[in-house]
Each structure stands twice: as C-alpha cells, then as structure tokens.
Length: 353
Image 1 (cartoon, rainbow, N blue to C red):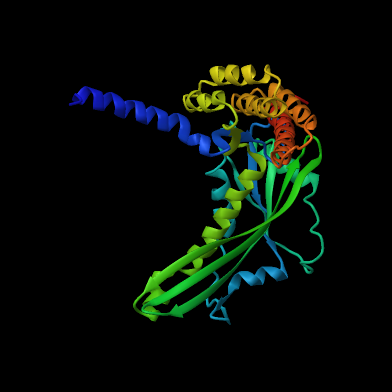
Image 2: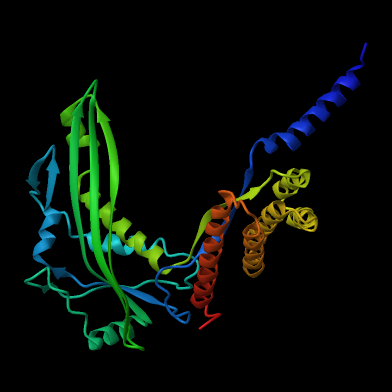
C-alpha cells in the first residue's frame, strides 16, 4: 500500500507538469503592463499655471440646450437650467487635471456676455490684449477658453413588467488654448461625446418625476464630462497594454512562462537567446520577437525595436512565413508608435525640444 507521502508527492509533481505543459496547447501567452501615453496637445513644459475662461458667448445654436426629446416628442424647458454649465465644465477640468501639471490652483474667469449672430461662422479668437490682461490679472501662463457647450437629451420610456427609461445625453463643446507670450493658439478643439443612463420604476410618473435625474443635473453632468475629457487632450495618462509572446515550438519557450509570470525577464531572455543560437529560423524569429516584447515591458524601447527587426529578418528567410509574420510586422509598427509617443512624453516634460 502506497504511503500518504507518495500520493502527496505525486500530486505536487502532477500540478507542476500541468503548469509547465498545459500552456503548450496554445501558441502564445500574454504580458500585461502599463505605459504613459502622451497627450494629443503638447503644451510647453515651463507652463506653471492655467486659467480657465468662460467666454460667455450667446449663439443661436445654444438654444438646443433648452430642448429635449421624450419618446420622439420634442419639449422645451419651462426654466433656464443652463446657468451653471460653464462652471461645471471648469470643475470637470480642474478636478481631474493630473499630477503631471504642478499647479496649485486654476483661476476661473467669466467674460462679459457676447452675442454672435451666425453660429455657423468661425468664431473670432479673443484679442491678444484681452488674453494678456487676463493672464496678468490671474498670474497665469496660458488660458483655456471655453467658447461654448451644448447638450441635447433624449429619453426613451418602455413598458414591460415595469417602466424603463433609456437616456442619451449628447454633449459637445469648443475649447481653445491661448499663449500670450508666444502669441500662439495651441488648439481649437471641438469635443463631442455622450453619456447613457438606465432607470426603472413600477410607475411611469415616478420614473419621470423622481427617478430620472432632473434637467439641471443632467446638463451639469454633461458639462463636467466635457471638462474632464479636455484633460485627456493635454495631460499624459497611464494606459494598460497587452502583448503576446510565443510559448510553442521548444521546451525553453514553456519554461520562460514561469519566469515571465515572476517578472524575471532576464532569465526568460537568456532562455530565448539560447534558442536563437541553434539555427532554426522559425524558432529564432519567435524568440527574437519574445525578447522584443520583454524589452518593451521593461521600458527599453531602443532594444525592443532592434530585436523586432531581427525577428523580421529571420522570418524573411523562411519560404513559408506563416500568418504570424503579419502579426510581427504589426507589432513592429506598434513599437514605432511607442517610440514616437516616447519623444512626445519627453517634450511634455521638457527633456527634448
């Protein structure tokens, strides 16, 4: 009769084998890591203070803010719920500006009301005299100017066992960034997006008058989101990235999984390098690709780009390049994009002109 110790050892051995060999049923595995994505608009690194300006324009098309639809019928507000929209756009911007901007406060300036007859005409920019005056008064380096914000809301109410309301909140706004020192407008961006809300109640009246947020709140929520979205245009942000690497073709590929999962990339790279030295072009191409992924995950983009080119060269020597060759070419383009992104990040932090 076998002892309990024998059974226990057999169990541990079986678990080890499962960990080692089950991944071999797949061709690839995945590495997840984070990268710092550069903003679309790169402001000068020496900017220390931003002021937010409500231009307070009144345009004919702003009337859309006072209308909404419910089950296809158009309604007009009995009261003006739009007075705080610009302030909430300012809050959405200021409360979400990342730690990459070292600014203690963001002044909020409301200009005197200004009317425009034709909303389709390109809005005239603020005069540099006005911009200079605001910057001096607020001790700011640049102005972020809100030209307008518009929101249109649609409700669809459906009866089933209970009443359901599906609410689409469509919003858009135009913001511009002025630099009085360089006399440059860095951006004139129209942003548009939407929010979605589901509500339920046993009573239609209760759904409409108590459950669905009021018009004032919905308009202000949309304006807040507009301000928050503008942060993403001028500030870097961390994003999640997933890269695949090959685990099939040689037992050393399977062994590397253990070290990758422990973030021990150096040992995994040594295993892959030993595969390259043996002259199999397909396995060498896979191993070189894996090393490129490991180098990218450790933020060594220069080496990663070198290794992916090495991988492509191995694949080009094959008569049958396989479908994975296209994936490696795509990854090469992704690394080039990351290289450009790195240059933008350096510009943002003032490390590169």
